[in-house]
Image (cartoon, rainbow, N blue to C red; front, side, top):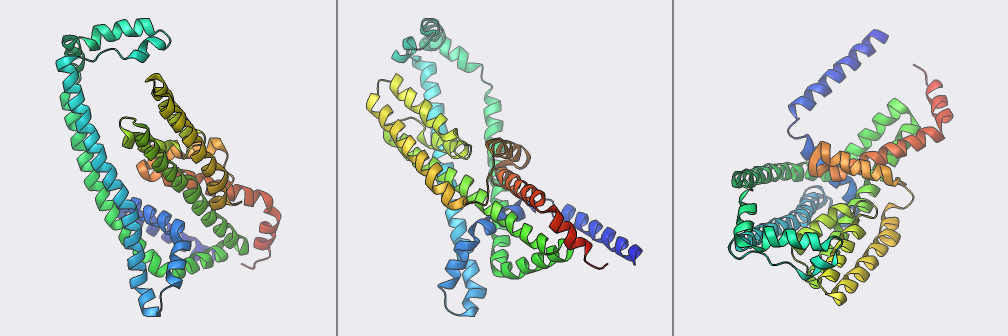
Length: 356
């Protein structure tokens, strides 16, 4: 019996590894679908409760909600891509203008530390058109071209991943309850009742991390990006995107809007600087003290270090997906650690009393 069980486990592990290798190009799409399904499942249940008829609920409800999630994610990304392209065109035109006429020394340069030396360097390298053309001419144009081509290839690849993500998300919405029941049965069989409870905590941790850290951070970036545009800052869209990323890290958003306020102050726009600073403080205060606690609740208590390491390590390992997976994995690991540390005796007793 022990030999048969070992052979079965070996066969299962081999099949899992083989399936992972076959699906290696689609694992990112499946991970995206799982994260989105976990994060939006309560909203989907509310949406499902408003629809009459079981036939509509089995096909049309998951299809409609999948399309709704796709629109919510695709539309902002599309608008951001268009705006980023416009910003890049403006930046190229601005660089060409510097090569022709030079860039005069701004008034704020003399007021910063070491402003005299910086002003002399600026006058020698940027204010003079010939020197500016020589300085900017050192930039390898082929590198810019290769970078643009790489972005195009990445966009095509990401679009393919998005299509398969939405397909997988539809099936998760349609068969999510049955799949969740199968996972719960497997956890109960392997780990006992404590395994089911741990699984629930992991799902709550993932949902709390995605909703509390990522979605709130994205909302902060959007709101502060609007503030940047109203304040008259250049490249407000790109600044808003940077704020979206850093807002997921504690004290990240104040760093961005604080530097923007200092820039406005250096440009003698005192009213805009003060308004942006006050607006940023209000947005981050509401997000940190009301929105995040309401979404996360008491499920996830992730220290700052693990949030930071999860974000940076996740982005390095999985790219954009790591913004979601990194903190979620860290939160799930922390939840598992706390659960196992708080009830080792009960778990061992439960497993020791089970007959082989």
